[in-house]
Length: 455
Image 1 (cartoon, one colour):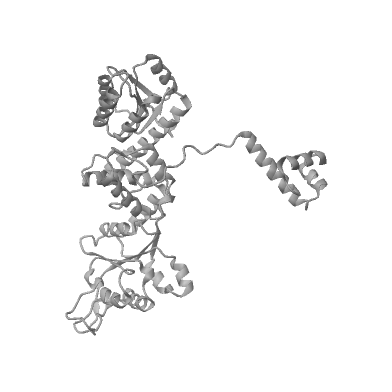
Image 2: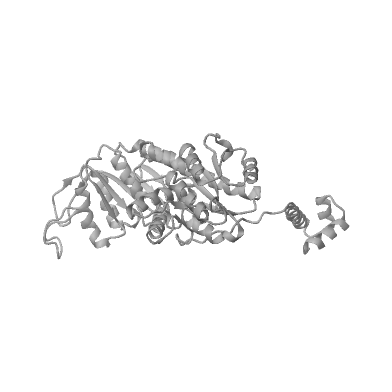
């Protein structure tokens, strides 16, 4: 990713008092715009002027070259000037405890000397890519809120195109059906459609069809007259009538009983209702948006959902993908929510450790955005660190690096697969298998023994 960006963005500041190591690091990061400083005051001056994306900061700086105080003070000063930059602390083997303290104080990561160019380059690349991702989100947030629908954050191209099409139909009155797993933001989209329509100044009324017992849901939807049933001590206006002129959002529509589906269908066709226990018809002008986490096509097949109602509700259908299928959205949303939560709870949390970022990317998020929000809220309230860790989020830190297959292992794997395939095709006949592989029978016997393949 970095190689595609201009060097005006790819700025790295190296804060190191050893001139030889400065020269070495300049060579390692020659594709960046490299700036160097030997002490705290010089580093802070460069940060204020240049606003680097990544900072490599030595823990031991003069006048406390053998201690951590000056490095930690420089870390604090840089974060005050440029809280979004990614700071990687460079430490000696004996400084591990101080390195952990630095990460808790806001450093992105730490690296133990001596310098290995490949390893350090990988850490810096990851830090820069995260900075770049967060910077893109900050730009989106500044440009008209950065959101097609208020509160719904995404940089995932496929989803942005989908939401663009939803935005195009928002000002019409066609029915919109939103499907997707729980926690993907279906109600946010429904509210977004409402505020983007000509009905925006009128009521948006939501009802969860799964949260209300079936025998009460009809009254909740259509209202009831006084005396219609035991306990009906007064006439009550239902949700449909309350949404007159505006939008009615029917969440979890897949849980509606067949009898209520029939009544809802009649309303959608005729735009009139009758309160429970009433005889007077009431005309209602309302736009209906519905949502479900169920497979309605399957429900139609099993007879638990009416096909004619489905087509009434889904004049425009949109499916929201789960968070695990939305690319970098988990990090974009996490940063967006973290800023809001830190402000709401007045906590000094500024970001995530590299371990936390890796853990969030690796996790499947079965509860989607709602689960992410809940984990972030709990972490922000309980942490004492400047950056949230995987443990703060109650996530398992992924293993360091997946083991890479060697060239010999790849050859062995391909060779074994070819032999097994040839033996299977020949029905276990070694002569025919050798012909398929274009090798001699003795050679094939040797390979069978080597790979421990039974014929």
